[in-house]
Image (tube, rainbow, N blue to C red; front, top):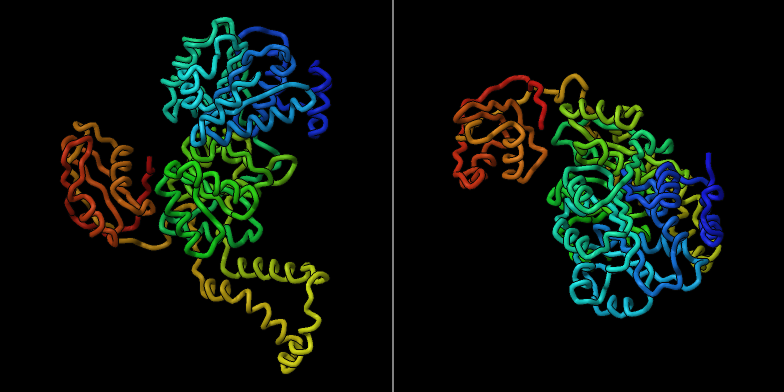
Length: 540
């Protein structure tokens, strides 16, 4: 395996990365460094977060840097403030032995005047979010007319966040002689359009999913009925008392809902989503990085650019549809040779996705039983005992109080004294999990019991462009609880049917009174009721 010493990078850079403990480049670093050190062609590099992309493009650019030039030599665009600051921190570490090097981050949500002041000084690299970068260019405070390298990092995410117009405007102002480096986790059609429009002769390098699935990450899933997903999450968290991780949800509303429930139940958690102000986001991330928060609940978009070390767990509260997103999430744990776990809570209809994901990552995703109340109580008890055993009492001045304490507790035997102290901390778990039901679901059947379902008529059919996936999306948008079990969808020409658990009949009736689909008024009425064992239905 090649080492960094064999890459030909300048001595100042090698000393810096050696001091950081880096010995061997990752696959994407190896290929990108070799390309950028030896070719002037543009480059498309496909790789996930966590594979070392920042070093892959910044090390060879620092090697070729003209330290005496007063012009901005490299513009690095990225989707979020967090990623912008992280890239700057990494490049500052790599360049710490290059005297006179200056890098400036520019991003929204903070004073533009401070950034303008920083840009007045000689600056070699600028790292920015598209909106703030374009703003500074239009104010004539940032010139990109002489850049040698343009880097688009997390290009797919910038497009999904709606930055296409800003990127187009920025690219038009850059010189045709520059070398463009496009780093992306995926290659959607919009990326290909940008590549065709703005890139010259180019090479493509790709790190396949199976190559970046860390050997340090174990993968597992828990099978739960839709209504038991949150209780299952609580049990997973409780059975891992020292958890420090991210819970991924599909939507902002689901993120808020899960975080609010965790907080209400006494967990050290908070949510990260697109509705937060930058100040709120910064506050939450500072608390999480400082381990004042144990659990962060987030969407994929909100979590982009977060680089938090030593995560023990990533939990998929909602399983992603895309294998690359699954790897992206999982790759946030198991770093720096440490062990990590990627856990998913799924329902019966998602078993097929698990098999597809296994092929994507080249690993088995094992099925685990949702922890029982007894198992959780044992784990929490041992954690408490370890905590008591290892507490530092040398610096605590309690000697003067001991006589009174001994007198107060002298009626207790040794065994009773231990029981009293353990119960003081432990009664909450014993009480909560006393007679706790089994949440596990058999793989061959999504529910342990027969259920009663209500059948609804909806005045939309395939002539209206309706299909099962669109109908499910429409129903989920209209109902506040996304754990409601929906099944037996029938799409006909002018109308359709779907079934919902009977206990939610009045909720469906109420929520669809004023429902509209693509601006069209929709009628949703109760049809006939069926009582039968649930049949399989693959939710889109």
